Image (cartoon, rainbow, N blue to C red; front, side):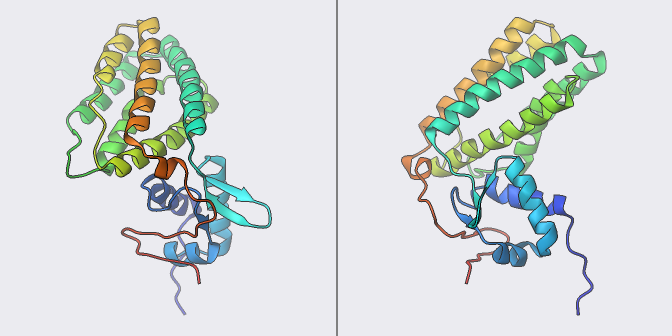
Length: 241
């Protein structure tokens, strides 16, 4: 009998979230617990805990008597995400600007430097190193916000919005155009120009939404409901029996 310990729920949650964000677990596909236990090598109890956390993050939905499935995607949902993300990130950034210190400003410069020195390349549609740097930059901007709950909501909305962006990139087979707004956003924040910084944040999210709509296709905006999970990628391919 194997004595290997099951991975912690957080690591399993991160692995499943990565497969959802990377498109390996398709929108609206059913997530059979027996399949997930084999795929991720985890016990049923920790897996249920991880799934509950993913439901809270908005990446998975639970249906009574039916189980779990990957959250579907739709144009109305994308537009709602755009509006809500804009509202909350602008509020968090305004609070960060009011409370930020020199150390906070230095962390923004460092995060921007790391991101700008690692451009995306055409031969790699989903570059997890770039993704991590991009996320770190955006949340460096909000790091001085004194409300942990508000920042946590921003993280949740970022995850949900980012799934649309990744799906659109994979559908189109190319990246969106380079967005010069982020460099201007850094300048506005360092200059303590709140009005410009908030306007640039709103424009950045709106432009990203427009690019997602341009890159995306009706195929993933209207995912077929009730499909079984088919996991392709480094963890292998698994279908329920």
